[in-house]
Image 1 (spheres, rainbow, N blue to C red):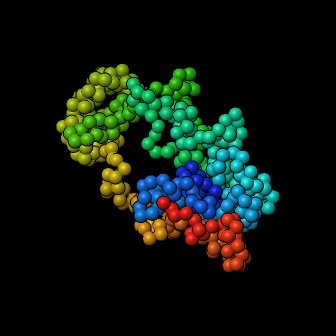
Image 2: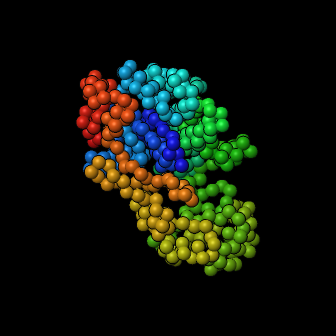
Image 3: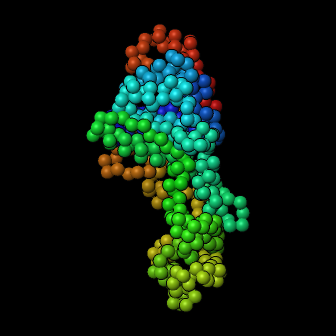
Length: 400
Protein backbone atom coordinates (compact mmCIF):
# COMPACT_ATOMS: atom_id res chain seq x y z
CA UNK A 1 0.00 0.00 0.00
CA UNK A 2 2.82 2.42 0.94
CA UNK A 3 5.55 0.27 -0.57
CA UNK A 4 7.01 3.19 -2.56
CA UNK A 5 7.33 5.40 0.53
CA UNK A 6 10.50 5.73 2.62
CA UNK A 7 10.20 7.11 6.16
CA UNK A 8 13.02 8.38 8.35
CA UNK A 9 11.98 7.71 11.94
CA UNK A 10 13.73 10.02 14.43
CA UNK A 11 11.59 9.11 17.42
CA UNK A 12 11.95 7.58 20.85
CA UNK A 13 9.71 5.68 23.28
CA UNK A 14 5.98 5.55 22.23
CA UNK A 15 4.84 8.84 20.70
CA UNK A 16 6.10 8.89 17.13
CA UNK A 17 7.41 5.32 17.21
CA UNK A 18 3.82 4.05 17.05
CA UNK A 19 3.16 6.41 14.12
CA UNK A 20 6.13 5.23 12.08
CA UNK A 21 5.33 1.59 12.91
CA UNK A 22 1.81 2.11 11.60
CA UNK A 23 3.25 3.45 8.34
CA UNK A 24 5.57 0.44 8.23
CA UNK A 25 2.61 -1.91 8.76
CA UNK A 26 1.02 -0.24 5.72
CA UNK A 27 4.07 -1.11 3.64
CA UNK A 28 6.41 1.87 4.01
CA UNK A 29 10.16 1.32 4.30
CA UNK A 30 10.85 2.81 7.75
CA UNK A 31 14.44 3.53 8.73
CA UNK A 32 14.78 4.18 12.45
CA UNK A 33 17.62 6.59 13.23
CA UNK A 34 19.13 5.76 16.62
CA UNK A 35 22.03 6.88 18.78
CA UNK A 36 25.19 4.80 18.15
CA UNK A 37 25.38 3.93 21.84
CA UNK A 38 22.18 2.65 23.40
CA UNK A 39 19.75 3.54 20.64
CA UNK A 40 16.16 4.50 21.45
CA UNK A 41 15.78 4.87 25.22
CA UNK A 42 12.70 2.63 24.92
CA UNK A 43 15.05 -0.31 24.30
CA UNK A 44 15.97 -0.20 27.98
CA UNK A 45 12.42 -0.30 29.37
CA UNK A 46 11.29 -3.62 30.92
CA UNK A 47 9.98 -6.27 30.67
CA UNK A 48 12.48 -8.22 28.58
CA UNK A 49 12.36 -11.39 26.54
CA UNK A 50 15.97 -12.52 26.55
CA UNK A 51 17.88 -9.29 25.96
CA UNK A 52 15.10 -7.57 23.96
CA UNK A 53 12.67 -5.11 25.49
CA UNK A 54 9.07 -6.18 24.85
CA UNK A 55 8.14 -2.54 25.51
CA UNK A 56 10.35 -1.43 22.59
CA UNK A 57 9.19 -4.28 20.33
CA UNK A 58 5.55 -3.26 20.75
CA UNK A 59 6.07 -0.05 18.75
CA UNK A 60 9.12 -0.77 16.58
CA UNK A 61 8.52 -3.85 14.44
CA UNK A 62 8.78 -3.72 10.65
CA UNK A 63 11.64 -1.19 10.77
CA UNK A 64 15.29 -1.04 9.82
CA UNK A 65 17.77 0.56 12.22
CA UNK A 66 20.62 2.91 11.32
CA UNK A 67 22.73 4.23 14.20
CA UNK A 68 23.73 7.82 13.56
CA UNK A 69 25.20 10.51 15.80
CA UNK A 70 22.99 13.47 14.94
CA UNK A 71 24.91 15.72 17.32
CA UNK A 72 27.96 15.55 15.04
CA UNK A 73 28.24 17.62 11.86
CA UNK A 74 29.08 14.50 9.86
CA UNK A 75 26.11 12.65 11.33
CA UNK A 76 23.76 15.50 10.45
CA UNK A 77 25.21 15.59 6.93
CA UNK A 78 24.56 11.86 6.55
CA UNK A 79 20.99 12.34 7.72
CA UNK A 80 20.45 15.07 5.12
CA UNK A 81 21.86 12.73 2.49
CA UNK A 82 19.33 10.09 3.54
CA UNK A 83 16.56 12.68 3.57
CA UNK A 84 17.23 13.65 -0.03
CA UNK A 85 15.82 10.27 -1.10
CA UNK A 86 13.15 9.96 1.61
CA UNK A 87 9.46 10.79 1.44
CA UNK A 88 8.67 11.34 5.11
CA UNK A 89 10.44 12.36 8.31
CA UNK A 90 8.75 11.69 11.67
CA UNK A 91 10.37 13.12 14.81
CA UNK A 92 9.31 13.67 18.42
CA UNK A 93 12.11 15.70 19.94
CA UNK A 94 11.39 18.82 21.95
CA UNK A 95 10.81 21.87 19.68
CA UNK A 96 14.11 23.38 18.56
CA UNK A 97 16.18 20.19 18.86
CA UNK A 98 16.09 19.29 15.16
CA UNK A 99 17.09 22.85 14.30
CA UNK A 100 20.07 22.59 16.66
CA UNK A 101 21.06 19.36 14.93
CA UNK A 102 20.81 21.15 11.58
CA UNK A 103 18.16 18.74 10.25
CA UNK A 104 14.95 20.76 10.74
CA UNK A 105 12.21 20.98 8.12
CA UNK A 106 13.57 24.10 6.39
CA UNK A 107 17.03 22.58 6.03
CA UNK A 108 15.70 19.24 4.77
CA UNK A 109 13.19 20.90 2.41
CA UNK A 110 15.98 22.93 0.76
CA UNK A 111 17.45 19.63 -0.43
CA UNK A 112 14.17 17.77 -0.87
CA UNK A 113 11.19 20.09 -1.50
CA UNK A 114 8.84 17.09 -1.67
CA UNK A 115 9.55 15.94 1.88
CA UNK A 116 6.63 15.47 4.28
CA UNK A 117 8.06 16.35 7.69
CA UNK A 118 6.03 15.57 10.82
CA UNK A 119 6.95 16.81 14.30
CA UNK A 120 5.17 15.37 17.35
CA UNK A 121 5.56 17.17 20.68
CA UNK A 122 3.71 17.68 23.92
CA UNK A 123 2.46 21.21 23.29
CA UNK A 124 3.19 21.87 19.61
CA UNK A 125 5.83 23.98 17.94
CA UNK A 126 4.54 27.36 19.12
CA UNK A 127 2.68 28.88 22.05
CA UNK A 128 3.59 29.74 25.65
CA UNK A 129 4.28 26.09 26.59
CA UNK A 130 5.99 24.98 23.38
CA UNK A 131 9.37 24.35 24.98
CA UNK A 132 8.01 22.78 28.17
CA UNK A 133 8.65 19.05 28.62
CA UNK A 134 5.50 16.95 28.38
CA UNK A 135 4.96 13.22 28.51
CA UNK A 136 1.73 11.26 28.11
CA UNK A 137 0.26 11.90 31.56
CA UNK A 138 0.82 15.67 31.26
CA UNK A 139 -1.26 15.86 28.08
CA UNK A 140 -3.94 13.69 29.69
CA UNK A 141 -3.99 15.97 32.74
CA UNK A 142 -4.04 19.32 30.98
CA UNK A 143 -6.60 18.30 28.34
CA UNK A 144 -9.37 17.63 30.85
CA UNK A 145 -9.37 13.89 30.19
CA UNK A 146 -8.08 12.97 33.64
CA UNK A 147 -10.66 15.22 35.30
CA UNK A 148 -13.44 12.93 34.05
CA UNK A 149 -11.67 9.62 34.65
CA UNK A 150 -11.96 7.73 37.93
CA UNK A 151 -14.47 7.45 40.78
CA UNK A 152 -16.26 10.68 41.71
CA UNK A 153 -14.97 10.60 45.30
CA UNK A 154 -11.28 10.14 44.45
CA UNK A 155 -8.49 11.99 42.73
CA UNK A 156 -8.49 11.92 38.90
CA UNK A 157 -7.06 8.86 37.16
CA UNK A 158 -4.97 8.62 34.02
CA UNK A 159 -5.92 6.09 31.37
CA UNK A 160 -4.19 2.74 31.75
CA UNK A 161 -3.18 3.03 28.08
CA UNK A 162 -0.84 5.92 27.08
CA UNK A 163 -3.64 7.55 25.11
CA UNK A 164 -1.91 10.89 24.57
CA UNK A 165 1.09 9.16 22.98
CA UNK A 166 -1.20 7.04 20.84
CA UNK A 167 -3.50 9.93 19.91
CA UNK A 168 -0.50 11.99 18.80
CA UNK A 169 0.78 9.09 16.73
CA UNK A 170 -2.61 8.40 15.13
CA UNK A 171 -3.13 12.03 14.12
CA UNK A 172 0.45 12.08 12.83
CA UNK A 173 -0.33 9.13 10.55
CA UNK A 174 -3.47 10.88 9.30
CA UNK A 175 -1.49 14.05 8.68
CA UNK A 176 1.26 12.22 6.82
CA UNK A 177 -1.19 10.34 4.61
CA UNK A 178 -3.08 13.56 3.86
CA UNK A 179 0.15 15.37 2.99
CA UNK A 180 1.28 12.51 0.74
CA UNK A 181 -2.08 12.60 -1.06
CA UNK A 182 -1.72 16.36 -1.55
CA UNK A 183 1.84 15.86 -2.84
CA UNK A 184 0.53 13.48 -5.48
CA UNK A 185 -1.54 16.36 -6.89
CA UNK A 186 0.83 19.30 -6.33
CA UNK A 187 4.32 17.83 -6.12
CA UNK A 188 4.88 19.82 -2.93
CA UNK A 189 5.94 18.57 0.46
CA UNK A 190 4.62 19.93 3.73
CA UNK A 191 5.41 20.46 7.41
CA UNK A 192 3.07 18.88 9.99
CA UNK A 193 2.90 20.06 13.62
CA UNK A 194 1.21 17.56 15.96
CA UNK A 195 0.61 18.51 19.60
CA UNK A 196 -0.31 15.73 22.01
CA UNK A 197 -2.33 18.25 24.04
CA UNK A 198 -4.24 19.31 20.92
CA UNK A 199 -4.95 15.67 20.09
CA UNK A 200 -6.31 14.97 23.55
CA UNK A 201 -8.48 18.10 23.39
CA UNK A 202 -9.83 16.80 20.08
CA UNK A 203 -10.66 13.46 21.74
CA UNK A 204 -12.91 15.21 24.28
CA UNK A 205 -15.59 15.37 21.54
CA UNK A 206 -18.97 14.82 23.27
CA UNK A 207 -17.53 15.70 26.68
CA UNK A 208 -16.47 19.07 25.30
CA UNK A 209 -19.94 19.35 23.76
CA UNK A 210 -21.45 18.96 27.23
CA UNK A 211 -19.35 21.84 28.56
CA UNK A 212 -19.96 24.06 25.54
CA UNK A 213 -23.72 23.58 25.98
CA UNK A 214 -23.93 23.91 29.79
CA UNK A 215 -20.86 25.98 30.67
CA UNK A 216 -20.16 23.34 33.34
CA UNK A 217 -17.36 20.77 33.63
CA UNK A 218 -18.37 17.24 32.71
CA UNK A 219 -18.74 15.28 35.99
CA UNK A 220 -16.41 12.46 36.96
CA UNK A 221 -18.63 9.42 37.45
CA UNK A 222 -16.32 6.41 37.42
CA UNK A 223 -17.87 3.65 35.30
CA UNK A 224 -21.24 5.36 35.13
CA UNK A 225 -22.40 7.92 32.60
CA UNK A 226 -24.47 11.02 33.30
CA UNK A 227 -26.61 10.72 30.19
CA UNK A 228 -27.68 7.07 30.28
CA UNK A 229 -28.91 4.56 32.87
CA UNK A 230 -28.01 1.76 33.25
CA UNK A 231 -24.51 2.27 31.94
CA UNK A 232 -21.48 0.80 33.66
CA UNK A 233 -20.02 -2.21 35.43
CA UNK A 234 -22.14 -4.63 37.42
CA UNK A 235 -21.16 -7.48 39.72
CA UNK A 236 -22.07 -11.02 38.65
CA UNK A 237 -21.79 -14.35 40.47
CA UNK A 238 -18.08 -14.62 39.67
CA UNK A 239 -16.78 -11.30 38.35
CA UNK A 240 -18.14 -8.23 36.53
CA UNK A 241 -20.02 -7.35 33.36
CA UNK A 242 -20.24 -4.06 31.46
CA UNK A 243 -23.77 -3.19 30.33
CA UNK A 244 -24.90 -0.27 28.18
CA UNK A 245 -28.45 1.01 27.68
CA UNK A 246 -28.62 4.13 25.52
CA UNK A 247 -32.10 3.74 24.01
CA UNK A 248 -35.45 2.66 25.41
CA UNK A 249 -35.55 -0.47 23.26
CA UNK A 250 -32.24 -1.54 24.86
CA UNK A 251 -33.93 -1.21 28.25
CA UNK A 252 -36.84 -3.37 27.11
CA UNK A 253 -34.42 -6.05 25.91
CA UNK A 254 -32.45 -5.92 29.16
CA UNK A 255 -35.63 -6.38 31.21
CA UNK A 256 -36.51 -9.44 29.13
CA UNK A 257 -32.96 -10.81 29.46
CA UNK A 258 -33.09 -10.74 33.27
CA UNK A 259 -36.65 -12.12 33.20
CA UNK A 260 -38.14 -8.94 34.65
CA UNK A 261 -40.31 -7.73 31.72
CA UNK A 262 -42.54 -5.69 34.06
CA UNK A 263 -39.67 -3.24 34.68
CA UNK A 264 -39.84 -2.08 31.04
CA UNK A 265 -43.22 -0.40 31.67
CA UNK A 266 -42.57 0.62 35.26
CA UNK A 267 -43.17 4.38 35.56
CA UNK A 268 -39.90 4.71 37.47
CA UNK A 269 -37.80 3.37 34.59
CA UNK A 270 -39.77 3.52 31.33
CA UNK A 271 -37.91 6.48 29.77
CA UNK A 272 -34.31 7.65 29.81
CA UNK A 273 -35.16 10.61 32.02
CA UNK A 274 -37.07 8.42 34.48
CA UNK A 275 -34.16 6.01 34.68
CA UNK A 276 -31.76 8.90 35.33
CA UNK A 277 -34.01 10.20 38.12
CA UNK A 278 -34.25 6.76 39.74
CA UNK A 279 -30.70 5.62 39.01
CA UNK A 280 -29.88 4.23 42.47
CA UNK A 281 -33.08 2.19 42.72
CA UNK A 282 -32.68 0.77 39.22
CA UNK A 283 -29.03 -0.19 39.75
CA UNK A 284 -29.88 -1.89 43.03
CA UNK A 285 -32.46 -4.08 41.26
CA UNK A 286 -29.99 -4.95 38.51
CA UNK A 287 -27.26 -5.86 40.97
CA UNK A 288 -29.60 -8.26 42.77
CA UNK A 289 -30.57 -9.97 39.51
CA UNK A 290 -27.09 -10.15 37.95
CA UNK A 291 -25.41 -11.87 40.89
CA UNK A 292 -27.49 -14.96 40.12
CA UNK A 293 -25.32 -16.02 37.16
CA UNK A 294 -21.71 -15.92 36.02
CA UNK A 295 -20.32 -13.30 33.69
CA UNK A 296 -19.97 -15.79 30.83
CA UNK A 297 -23.58 -16.90 31.24
CA UNK A 298 -24.88 -13.34 31.28
CA UNK A 299 -22.73 -12.39 28.25
CA UNK A 300 -24.40 -15.15 26.24
CA UNK A 301 -27.87 -14.21 27.48
CA UNK A 302 -27.36 -10.51 26.72
CA UNK A 303 -26.12 -11.35 23.23
CA UNK A 304 -29.20 -13.48 22.61
CA UNK A 305 -31.48 -10.60 23.59
CA UNK A 306 -29.46 -7.93 21.76
CA UNK A 307 -28.30 -6.07 24.86
CA UNK A 308 -24.86 -4.38 24.53
CA UNK A 309 -22.63 -6.01 27.15
CA UNK A 310 -19.18 -7.44 27.64
CA UNK A 311 -16.95 -9.15 30.19
CA UNK A 312 -14.10 -7.13 31.68
CA UNK A 313 -10.90 -8.84 30.62
CA UNK A 314 -7.45 -8.13 31.92
CA UNK A 315 -4.58 -7.81 29.43
CA UNK A 316 -3.89 -11.56 29.68
CA UNK A 317 -7.45 -12.89 29.54
CA UNK A 318 -8.36 -10.93 26.42
CA UNK A 319 -6.11 -13.04 24.18
CA UNK A 320 -8.05 -16.20 25.11
CA UNK A 321 -11.36 -14.82 23.85
CA UNK A 322 -12.60 -16.76 20.80
CA UNK A 323 -13.47 -13.62 18.85
CA UNK A 324 -10.10 -11.99 19.56
CA UNK A 325 -8.38 -15.18 18.41
CA UNK A 326 -10.46 -15.15 15.23
CA UNK A 327 -9.41 -11.57 14.44
CA UNK A 328 -5.72 -12.61 14.71
CA UNK A 329 -4.46 -9.49 16.45
CA UNK A 330 -1.72 -11.29 18.37
CA UNK A 331 1.32 -12.09 16.26
CA UNK A 332 4.81 -13.43 16.80
CA UNK A 333 7.93 -11.65 15.55
CA UNK A 334 11.66 -12.22 15.64
CA UNK A 335 13.97 -10.00 17.68
CA UNK A 336 17.50 -11.30 17.36
CA UNK A 337 17.37 -14.87 18.62
CA UNK A 338 14.15 -14.27 20.54
CA UNK A 339 10.49 -14.62 19.57
CA UNK A 340 8.19 -11.93 20.94
CA UNK A 341 4.44 -11.43 20.85
CA UNK A 342 3.04 -8.13 19.56
CA UNK A 343 -0.35 -6.73 18.59
CA UNK A 344 -0.76 -6.75 14.82
CA UNK A 345 -2.02 -3.94 12.58
CA UNK A 346 -5.76 -3.68 13.31
CA UNK A 347 -7.07 -2.47 9.95
CA UNK A 348 -8.08 -5.22 7.52
CA UNK A 349 -7.71 -4.39 3.80
CA UNK A 350 -9.29 -6.42 1.05
CA UNK A 351 -6.00 -6.91 -0.78
CA UNK A 352 -4.25 -8.03 2.44
CA UNK A 353 -1.33 -5.66 1.86
CA UNK A 354 -0.68 -4.71 5.48
CA UNK A 355 0.90 -6.56 8.34
CA UNK A 356 4.19 -7.68 9.79
CA UNK A 357 7.02 -8.40 7.36
CA UNK A 358 10.07 -7.67 9.55
CA UNK A 359 10.88 -8.26 13.18
CA UNK A 360 12.59 -5.80 15.55
CA UNK A 361 16.11 -4.64 14.62
CA UNK A 362 19.05 -4.37 16.94
CA UNK A 363 20.60 -0.93 17.29
CA UNK A 364 22.28 -0.08 13.99
CA UNK A 365 21.52 -3.47 12.45
CA UNK A 366 21.06 -1.96 8.99
CA UNK A 367 23.79 0.71 9.12
CA UNK A 368 26.27 -1.13 6.91
CA UNK A 369 23.73 -2.02 4.25
CA UNK A 370 22.24 1.48 4.17
CA UNK A 371 25.59 3.24 3.81
CA UNK A 372 26.71 0.80 1.13
CA UNK A 373 23.53 1.54 -0.84
CA UNK A 374 24.41 5.22 -0.51
CA UNK A 375 27.77 4.50 -2.16
CA UNK A 376 30.09 4.34 0.84
CA UNK A 377 32.91 1.83 0.73
CA UNK A 378 33.73 -0.59 3.53
CA UNK A 379 36.78 1.50 4.43
CA UNK A 380 34.72 4.71 4.56
CA UNK A 381 32.14 3.08 6.80
CA UNK A 382 34.89 1.83 9.12
CA UNK A 383 36.27 5.37 9.31
CA UNK A 384 32.84 6.80 10.17
CA UNK A 385 32.49 4.22 12.94
CA UNK A 386 35.96 5.04 14.23
CA UNK A 387 35.04 8.75 14.45
CA UNK A 388 31.79 7.96 16.26
CA UNK A 389 29.62 9.32 13.44
CA UNK A 390 27.72 6.05 12.95
CA UNK A 391 27.47 2.83 14.87
CA UNK A 392 26.77 -0.81 14.21
CA UNK A 393 25.51 -3.78 16.21
CA UNK A 394 29.13 -4.49 17.11
CA UNK A 395 29.80 -0.99 18.48
CA UNK A 396 26.39 -0.22 20.00
CA UNK A 397 25.62 -0.94 23.62
CA UNK A 398 23.53 -4.08 24.16
CA UNK A 399 19.77 -3.63 23.96
CA UNK A 400 19.50 -4.47 27.62
